[in-house]
Length: 263
Image (tube, rainbow, N blue to C red; front, top):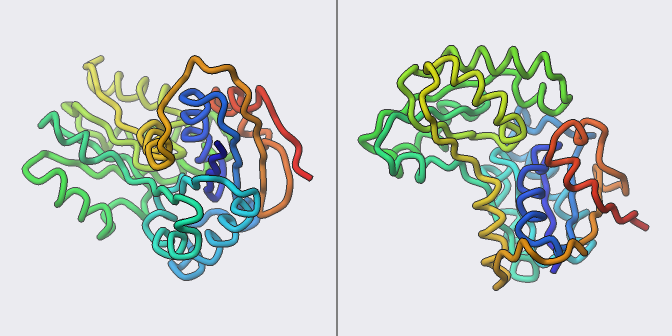
């Protein structure tokens, strides 16, 4: 079984690590776009072109499924990706976990990029899945870039600024950008200070999207299997290895345990 993941940068690490934990035997293909990142400021048409190029590079390695491990690309490029790749390759998009966060009926904070915060896409998710629930949209300027660069000081500063915008009585936090899951520990610490140590529930997309990919392939999580799956890394279509910044995160180090060269 081979599963590919795509993103503009290292935001895909969280979902890739989730797949690795759930199925250590899965072959993984990580396809990113350092030449074209960030994707957020691009027009939808331009972003779709970049996403198609990244997906085609992954598809050349004949995966069974492709996880679009990027909220922005899922919003704008998912229909084009599915039109080109399915049914030969199952394409799974990433959606912020607003629905499960709203189930508790508590106060929800959605941490997202400034471009996503307040967008028609996010507002529609709130309307459809969190009607009647207290929701605060929290823009996190600079956080994804800081995570991408593995700049710890910049991450701490961006997280602190977002924490100040988060209600002190929040009960559930949606990490609405795949990059943010890589620094969940830092986010937890900042919000613990903000809320007086109240117990919070965090909602990410990495594990749910990994489980959905397995489901689409008729497979099941089997974390006890031997780790036999290799790792192929592509950067803007070029054979590569995990970038140095990726190794600054536990997810990147987990994936680096076994690397298969391309070519």
